[in-house]
Image (cartoon, rainbow, N blue to C red; front, side, top):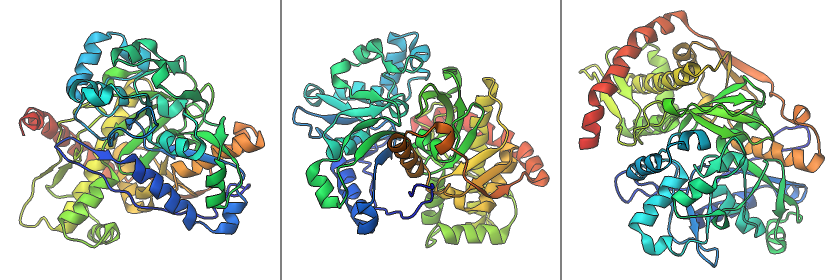
Length: 468
């Protein structure tokens, strides 16, 4: 990103997820570091040499367990891993005020229950744990040699007193850990170290500062200017997030709403989270034998009609808000002989939209007020899906320049704050609007009639999910 805020170049490197058992989801931290090196060295060398500061963002909640030599002891357990439901129940029983301390229910996605699972099922690994890091902070360690994290990402571990913006000794003790196992906490725009000499030489970058950064959602919010109370965005990534910025900590754990620190000082946010969003499109593409998501979207747009009888429950990885149900399964219901690939694609887009509506209702039921919603993430490229989402949510969706870049752009803004000393109001502005998806009255009426059946379908099936 240049000094004006324009994105001048991006690079990517692919990663794979391992699922060795039902409910499991893991990655090798060494793969993150290899992918980081691959992506960085794809960037133009002249641009690399001009870099003045680096910000970091990454997937939240992942449990990266390091031993005394700072090497990973096992594959990292990821945010969408559902194996620790029993440990969540035991933590909530052991600490009755857990929701008020952490701002959240104990859910399998969070880091603390994962460590409790390792403690109970892999005691020989647990005994060797010296440090627990989140994914982006493992990358930071390789870059700087420093053990550090930011408030927003760490708030998703279930080890933080979110209101106090500090580690909670009681939550750490509940999983057999203490502060010595945790990295030092920083605000998102604070400098946590400098690029190591040998890495600076290999990358063709100066020994520049590396800034704390943020968890993917908080950094995404910084990128699109969702930093003031009442600002909101919807993220259409692998998972789906409806994010609302707040000026204070306002937990509502009973509804499955997340309350976390923002990536900027003295700011917090609430989120409703669905575990499968754009990943449902990828699943449907594979199911229907299509080439890619673009082909799926083209078929659905050419059909240009609501689903007839098809309903899709998008719980391919379980669900968080509002169900907190790691056992929930995806369901494709109401198929007929006329249900072709386009009809299935339409049902998938609608199912994700209704799941977002469930999450929004959980936020508004806790007193939140949401007007227009900015869209970020790779799924933000489809304006057809935007119309479906806007109509299901009953709010216009605003598409902004750079919205598809998402968290990486916010990480760059946090680096710019650290390097320039500029104010939040100067840097964290809302990018220019390039499109608005308004609600469609016809579609809104359709969703009003469709949503009760969608919700009843989950309620009727939820007990059978645990049996399958």
